[in-house]
Length: 402
Ligand SMILES: NC(=O)C1=CN([C@@H]2O[C@H](COP(=O)(O)OP(=O)(O)OC[C@H]3O[C@@H](n4cnc5c(N)ncnc54)[C@H](OP(=O)(O)O)[C@@H]3O)[C@@H](O)[C@H]2O)C=CC1
Ligand SMILES: CC(=O)C(=O)O
Ligand SMILES: [Mg+2]
Image (cartoon, rainbow, N blue to C red; front, side):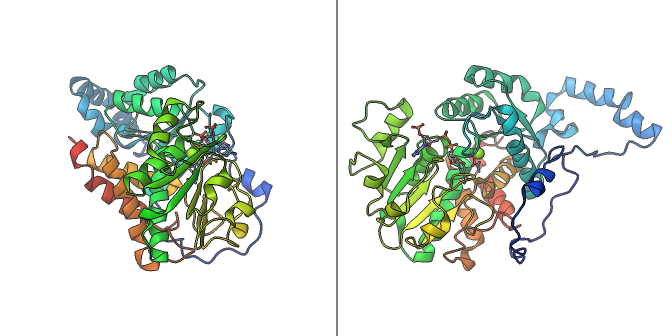
């Protein structure tokens, strides 16, 4: 795809460019004709090159694969090719903008796979939001790729789609908005806890957003031993008394909100230690002001955080967003390139909870000696991140290889 090889230059500590605002012209110019290209892996200059790469030579390779399908791993590009798949139903925080409008984001994810993990990746946007059709399409396309990164597919369909695709395909499948996000949020909370010298397992955590990202974040935090997690959707606290919950939220309500609170974000945030925003909503300053001392605020919606970090910092000790232009970028880009690279290196057939926890620990371990309130996670441009995540994920994959 991209014509550049993996770039291992450390750009994370480069001085920030002069604070000239990025113009609309600059942004659109950076997307003209898309952000990806296909490049040749073998020369095609001579008749001899042509006879090897194309007919007649290629026929021998095709015959060999027809006789032994496992040879496709060696003699095609599919083994390490990741498809980034979206139906355009929950694109960033922009909502259901459809497959065509989602494509710049999916091209961007593919570009990040190449830049940070050296993995070739193709964006595939689907003109259907029907789970049966999405699963069927990926099953039919299975000979063409080695792994599936599901992206920006809305809840609750994303849960069923991920489960069914993972069950149907013998290769790594991960819904990035769920698990990539959850991995990085856990890493960031570990980083924040170390900066503050406290144990966050007893912290009161509030998550705004009970969709793909919110539910996965709740799950990984519970798995990591944090017991007091409260989640809100667009109607308020996901509590056991509610009669309007989907089955996934009913299950969530049974495992969260131990104080049995009902009500609004104001009710949830009063005295809370941690706010995690994955809602595309907003959180007013006066509510952040009611949080506990040394509060932690992760306003992760893209492109617009739930609260501007400068405002959140008036009341919170540690503040992060999902954006590339503020410190403490908590974004799934810290996870997915290394997770897929590690899974493919190990020949993993699935991505497991163990692999996700290993990824979270690897992310924070990269900045262990550099942790600070404005550096609770490494920069996505830190060249140590993806290799560390890949190594940890591969080591944790032993039970799903072979
Ligand atoms: N920084 C990062 O790495 C990432 C950030 N995100 C961001 O998280 C947001 C959600 O993404 P995703 O989970 O994929 O989307 P989903 O569509 O799956 O879920 C959105 C959730 O937000 C809830 N919601 C909507 N408006 C509000 C509101 N005003 N207050 C509280 N909850 C609200 C919805 O409620 P209901 O269920 O009632 O409809 C739903 O539960 C996006 O802005 C996205 O950019 C996502 C992934 C990674
Ligand atoms: C970062 C990302 O995946 C999102 O905001 O949807
Ligand atoms: Mg996304």
